[in-house]
Image (cartoon, rainbow, N blue to C red):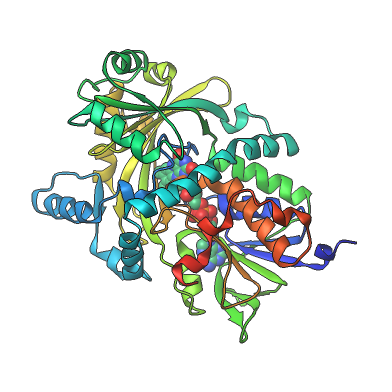
Length: 448
Ligand SMILES: Cc1cc2nc3c(=O)[nH]c(=O)nc-3n(C[C@H](O)[C@H](O)[C@H](O)COP(=O)(O)OP(=O)(O)OC[C@H]3O[C@@H](n4cnc5c(N)ncnc54)[C@H](O)[C@@H]3O)c2cc1C
């Protein structure tokens, strides 16, 4: 019997991160997953398409300007003009808000952006092999989970396209040379892309092999297969983590129940901050709300060739979304609201995103045709997940902070956590070959 057979891991949170963590850990440990909702994937991991954005190696600090968010929020409040990013006062009340802002600024230097880009590149290159491995291992049907490889296209409006390309090359080429496009070449791409109204965009960046996968259907399939593999699912809200001096001893549930194991993993999305605060661990995670529209079968959906990301003032992502074989939809995501933990779907934000959708698809949508959703993402200050053990409690581990790319990053994150656990327990030879360098994700960078 392997030593791990004796170990029992309890995971908090049944979003895509908790589920993929359970999938990886169940290969080596006895696993219990605690989820407060009646079903898994009802939080941020709901109706999204799991695309790996173009320019996904660029950390959030290089495109999310904090002062820009403040300015556009003020202008928007005063003039009632919609802005793409918005900060509401409720965001200030979130646990560790100022800690997040501090680390955000500490990570805005070019040096730090490049450092994290390297991490994203390493983690990013592990995604495709792990997705393929998972689909094969669990015998999942690709069409049922909307698994596709779609080229990505980022469009921006810049003052000097040639200079932009040479600056990008100077900055990123050493890490990840990209396929930039300007001039006649870009015009050709734009006209074949299916997208409308993009005449003013004069800079493009193309990535082949963007992966799309339907997060919720993948999550539900994972749960089904994990049940077959004897993973235990408990419906209950963790209200308290019970600890002694240096170990977690158990979890108290809101209904009074207790769950105990040998090792614990927190993967409760943005709500992880509150859970950890109770045991005096301050983790800087900003809850950021994003919206998505699913537009029904249409000319636009069928003709769409790229996962198109329109930058700056729009910051929308248009992804072909296919459920089953015949159902063509277009998914439009966008808007980043620092709205605290308020889950309200704000109608003025839906209206704004619908206008964006109509502008770029050239279609008009009847409100009742459109499926609308918003979810709250756990965004870390350097846009890189927080994966690994905590210094304070020897049996407590984290897999959180996946922000805008949680579906994309879920499998490498879960594999790394599993490798770190095995290595910590001195169990497997795998420990010498981590799926990406754990230093990038180490919780100690935030003093945890
Ligand atoms: C509109 C939108 C579009 C997106 N598009 C993409 C995309 O194209 N590609 C991509 O890769 N990513 C995308 N994302 C980001 C991605 O969805 C998230 O990064 C990811 O879902 C985060 O997963 P998670 O498991 O950490 O969080 P969640 O899915 O929120 O899961 C956390 C779980 O923990 C549970 N929980 C919380 N507290 C407790 C408690 N005390 N006790 C028990 N359970 C608890 C919650 O109920 C929840 O189920 C998008 C997000 C949104 C909102």
